Length: 293
Figure: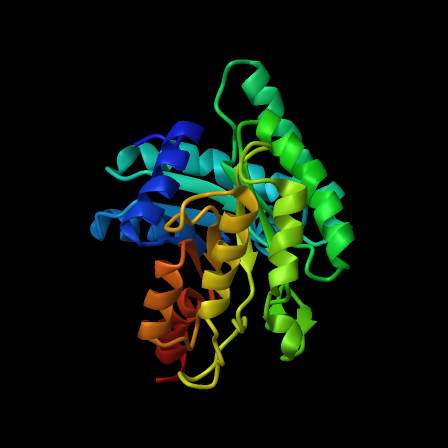
């Protein structure tokens, strides 16, 4: 199928929340990994999301170029051609983008999609992530509000991170501490600033002890009930029915998490689950085994 339109993407997210399942979001860095992800979606008979990080996009542009926009645009254009050959919906997304890379990554990509939409075309990417976990909450939300407005005009969805995911993502280290848990006040302030969808749809990567990287099961102290609390805060703030789950949640750093914890998190409104570390191992382990045997 063609890359998912904004309407299809919204329907995918609505269906995931209603059916209590989450779409896999696979990080890719090359045509090989992108092809593998889409083929896996097709074999599983599941729609899915492929995403590019800042480092992955830079790598995709070639080591002699190292341009995040060039790499991500090239991968997106490739995906638009290849995805048509498969019977599933594929969404294109960009992963963690910190403040110092916004002007060299997310903002130019949003501008490209806005230009496409102005010409009557579909956006190049369907969603982008702003990672403001390294700045204070108010600055995080101020930037998120600006980006959400731009995203809505380009018919795309913004992902934001409120709190800190531990471990390492593209060279950014975060210690394991109480900041790994999004507070009720954080949720309330997020809804205050970003609204409940009327200003544009956004995905929320709330933190509940999740950690990037490789951890054995049992070593990651997840508290999925924090996601439930966030839905309750948002529901009360927006005056919604008792069973409403107004927030579209994202699960980052799931490696090492127990299946029961994953199921519980999804039941609270997680609609997107990032997969990167595990697929990196799946891609590199056979090569290493072949070389050293």
